[in-house]
Image 1 (cartoon, one colour):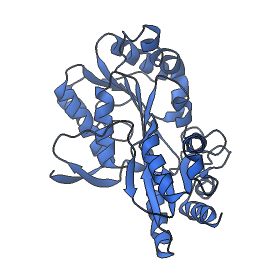
Image 2 (cartoon, rainbow, N blue to C red):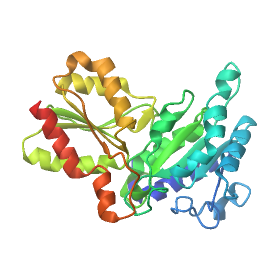
Image 3 (cartoon, one colour):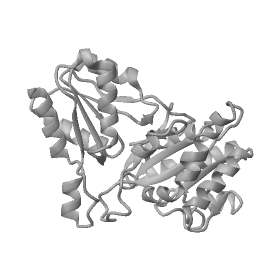
Image 4 (tube, rainbow, N blue to C red):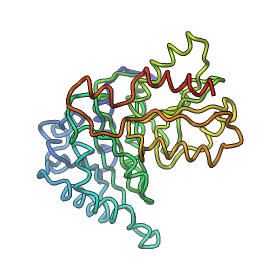
Length: 327
């Protein structure tokens, strides 16, 4: 495939544009997604191409946005709903958790809910406690929801296209500090399969599992660990639910040691679910307890120094790997 270098936000916008050209039922709705191009410029150019009917600015009401998206999905459309900050998903939980996730089940599989919900999450921008949370675990708890967290421009485009084509509700979680990251994206049509993790680096000493922006931190940590003679196998989970047990289990069978890195809080965070799945599926292959690297159990601070201390850092990943190696 011929490749170009795009930013993450450009890859997101391109995915939506391609799917809107391919299928007239696809449309985008959310706060400032139209002429403004989205709070993080991830829908830039769409309003000019598709107009106000298919790129719809909404009132500042997350419950209305999600509810309207659900109604549109149930009546034959394929809406892409943008919730500006993941923190504000709390305002739309009834439509998402009690309705979108359950309609197909309650109608015996006869109803389709092709609803894609995009949202931005994560700390590191000084947005303080109400705009910086990592709440992905909320949605992995709910049967009927699919949850993906692309970490690269390639995956941002490919996973979003797969989400839009799905007949189920898919939560696409984009880290705010990844929007400016650049990477290769093919010009040709491609999809990234939902439910399949990516082995970014093969190794023999320890399996390092990570999600979203934490993958970038892991790649930096691996450079130091490699110089110190530790051979890391690194897996980008990409899809949180459904979880790719097969890829992870194959890696654990080879390395026998695991470190899980996730930006969510230590208590109740997604790293706990991954650790539990590994214990369920791979216990006989483990030579040491699973180590979790996660955010501290405090609200995300506004102060930049405190914020950096609360969320996982490269030094924490290095320390976690060394800890599990020494077990």
